[in-house]
Image 1 (cartoon, rainbow, N blue to C red):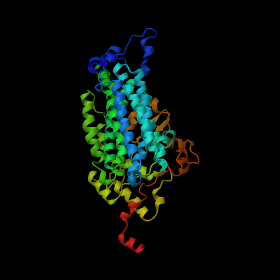
Image 2 (image 1 turned 90 degrees about the horizontal axis):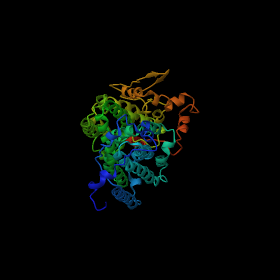
Image 3 (image 1 turned 45 degrees about the horizontal axis):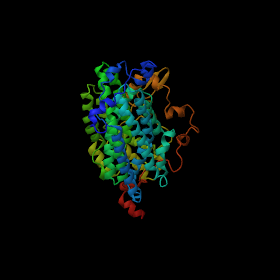
Image 4 (image 1 turned 180 degrees about the horizontal axis):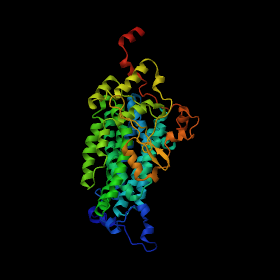
Length: 501
């Protein structure tokens, strides 16, 4: 076989379906785990993955990727990147590692479910490689930040975050558990590999690698690039599965899976990537705004992918695009104000030049978010940092687990979208979040947000300090302004500075 071209033996080698004799087919592949939705096995055998590879090829390529990433890390061990990097960039690293590293282990479990219960031989084959990919992604994203722990203990949250009740970690777990761990093999193929990875993470990692190189962090750039090339391969698992579902009359079910997954991914993506691109990335390194990025990559490319497969755009597509103008700005104001509840220091991104850039990219920003930041800046100039810190917790969305927020100032549109179900009132950030809940209330009804737990008396003492203890945030880990409020000096009257001197 080694002397043959791969295309001469690949299809035969991965055709591993068989007729069981000791158990029934339903026992071997229970529908609860496969999610085959009544599509017969013969139909699944037509599954044809676009990205084909063999095990020897996979091992050779992965070995080269690891050798490259670890070699770059070793070569730059004595560089002063950490000491000389912009604090905003370090905050991006901390938030990324904490939110993503152990999430890769969740994705590994999801790939393992497809490996065992995928109905298509090709799906099981590619998911086997995907499972090894995700294990590698978790390990390498735990190893790389470990060397920074001695310099800054916030980097320890790469490993610690998912073992805590910190609200951002709860939000990430809630999303990943829903899309990755509590679904059937077919649902995972659609929601994880197609909607989440093809639609969001693959594009994010491309941009993140480029931003890292631009910022001079070649270690992180090499790491992310090695992960992204894996993502681009196993992200192809979902497309052929969708084609089979649609061809056999399951379009409505497939459409719902895609719509729910995009809605859930968008909230987390908006929080992490939107704030990083438009606020934490140093101004001189910003190539495009988050809105421009979303329109080019997510709307421009993913929209075509959906339509080419025969799916419709999600019913909320236009509303989501409208949120490009404001939702991540609202999240940025929220994470900066509630910075003591985070494991990274938040870069305000509020120098006069940054504000000019934001107004250019988002016309009207100054009349809405800018007005709210003006109050914060005036308090900081007056030495009243205490007025820029929270005393309690905000209302949290029962779906995203992220605070409910939108546009302040002119154009105010902050609104709760409540729903009463079985005598309990749930609160949502938008009609989209509420709609996701309504698709499967039993899946979500018993979960308590951080604020629900606070009101239920689970957090003691019942104040912000009690909440920080509950979130496992220790001294030296609690977030603050990334630049030590140095940016506020740009707003002070130069004459006042001279008189003070």
